[in-house]
Image (tube, rainbow, N blue to C red):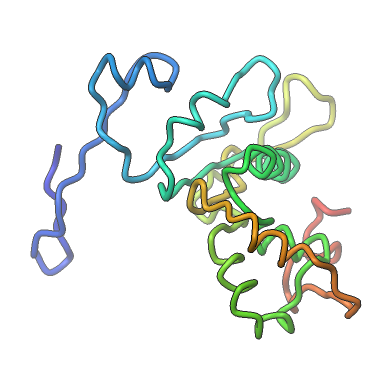
Length: 190
């Protein structure tokens, strides 16, 4: 535990980081009397890798807990987002992904319910990722940067009534904002 101070010297609060060797689940939490997490961070978790099981661990994260997950590639980030949607741990496609797939435009911003729904998660390039380009040891011609993409939001904000309203299609043309993720500005989409 360490005291955290602001730039002006005034105390901001306490930071406590706890780590445990083992699978995060109800048994570990009871065994070590672990308090509720204030935030959960996943570094390249591999939610969709068949060798890992995340259902119990995700079920132990309390409703309303902020989370951040990083991945090495955009494709892994998209797969992790889909996994969390399938597990009802997030309720909508984050705006960064929605814009990439042409499912959202800033013209839709007048709908307060849809706006609140979009504000519960995000998907973007991680501004704090490494700069070293690496080559995959399992896939030929696959290059990546560690923790390049990040997905974040609030766990378990799923509200079926809002999700149903936001999934109703619109006939208007949907476009990404200028300078957003497009094939011209993002080589990963080519």
